[in-house]
Length: 294
Image (cartoon, rainbow, N blue to C red; front, side, top):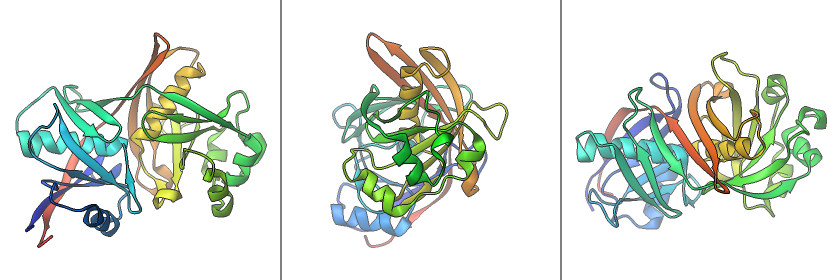
């Protein structure tokens, strides 16, 4: 089908070459599932996004997301990065909102924040199964006492489910290491395949939460910045009144352990029995190019 244009962007990056890198491919409608999967595997970022057409369909832009191992129905930093590329490289003019059509449904991204933060409204948070803290501590190679037993270890989803693990201290968070055998045993019967581990102690004083995400099922040993996972975290924090409020507006740091410091903005609020979640971050294009003779 000839040459295809792609862009490399940093998402949740306060400065260049931090945050979570993403490849975004334009005009990908002619690619087969196999070819999209091959490209995502070759690029080997946590996700690669494919914009199927430069034209709107059903009120938004059709987008598909592949990890190095498989397609996923939704992911956070691909939503923000893709909306940014659509604005700057396809529409090429300021717009307030871009609608992205994912497999889970439509996700709106607001691009009108004066600080340069893009905001996506995720699906209302839903809560799933609760996990035994002792089993989770074995998976993470930490002591059971390191887990904050005031709050449950629980599966939460805003489109892509995560197991949310509350940890007491930054020291315990830093020493967390996945036991592969126990991890794959854990997720065998769980909808969620990734663990988001968090604590209220932070490396940078201006932030509110420190996060690490482990997603080896998707081919990601540790993710530097995770919009979908942090959306789940926002729902969890609201549900369990973590900040003594049913409404949050906080800053999350992630990626420090792997040398890609990232900043994610979270807003959440309980409204009429639902938990509304907004996830924000900055985006910048760092490279572009062409795939030849795809």
